[in-house]
Length: 112
Image (cartoon, rainbow, N blue to C red; front, side, top):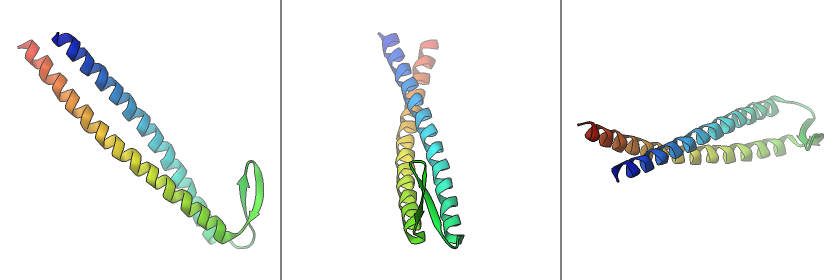
């Protein structure tokens, strides 16, 4: 009976750790995208003359202020997504640590 419960907890821990790895990958991808947006914003800010953006593989002339607005909105959205992922990571990390402690305690008791 105890083995089944222990195995269930180990499987749950493995699932949580898989989710944590997935969140880490998502957060890294979003962080790279955020860096690209920040760099693009800086270039638009410094730029003079005509501005262009690429939409579906086509370069379209665009207004500088409109580009800055779009980039600012994308930046806010990505930051919000990163914050959401970080909150989920903290929750899962706590669950993972609690499960790991519980598993270690049970294994330790069985050895005694």
